[in-house]
Length: 248
Image (cartoon, rainbow, N blue to C red; front, side, top):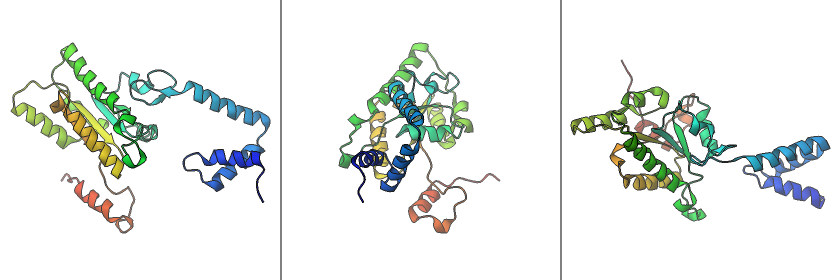
């Protein structure tokens, strides 16, 4: 039995959503038809308002009702700690931990030549401009003396050994230590993710003050509660490489 055209078109539209297969699209279509006219009108109004009112933050490209999102305008967050993510959903996942106190930058995807996605299609240039603006503002304000202790705090998820090496290097050279900028790459460890991170590292390395930029990435490893015999070989290898010492 074939669906009437109106129902088939409705199922087809739901099927276009990411992660929605034919069966799920069918269930969603039937559920929508079972709702009252008032409920459907409410659904359409909410969708219309969201489409018209929600826009990208002009700074980090998070979704917001304002030109600049609440995270970017939060003065309690650290300006020298930026977490670079692929999509807004990744930002939300990190925010749910309530541990990260820096700011974000949403790339809007990953470099994927096979899919025709290049760096020009992402928010890469905006990230480079943010980095330049950060150091320009430091110079304009005449700031000196890095807040290394703040970077060491577990509350901002910085890497202790990376920051220690950074501090020791600059102290050894007897140079005035300016506020360093840490970029945390919270990007999926896929082929596209690795290519994107390598490209970003290359571009950032060409900038002025690149020696005052700390780049880190989320650690690989086993999820909490996981059994080793259920983990794949690559995950175990990465977990071994990212092992940490135990304090006695």
